[in-house]
Image (cartoon, rainbow, N blue to C red; front, side):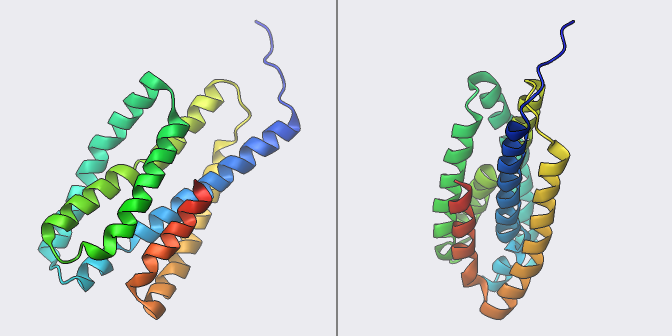
Length: 183
């Protein structure tokens, strides 16, 4: 069996840098939106029952959407395109988020669609990474994923403090800035 071709070190560096940045923006966006959603729902006046129900709907919609998007990517192979489309869709949905607090029906639709769009992005990145590694690309998944974890943690600390200082209105601009960098 022939030995696989050795990757150019600059290719390895470039690929790992790009995926580190990708992970480093996906996870903070996730933190900004979903890690601090309960305070937003409380600010809109929802009680524990409805907050629990909404977070359950987020989990269920993510559980359904992730394998469906995965099957679509397996069948069509356009992971990057789907990633960008879902990212843009999540930006539109987040821009609408401040206007959804008035009615439970709007909030349900909003959080389910946000879950379908944003909560699937980390799993798309994981699937994309695995596919590249299986194709022989020199991607160091542990390194790139750890960058996502690090930026998630730093963002969660910083954004929590920012929310306490400025209020929930900052969610939309911070999210849109992160996603603009990502897209």
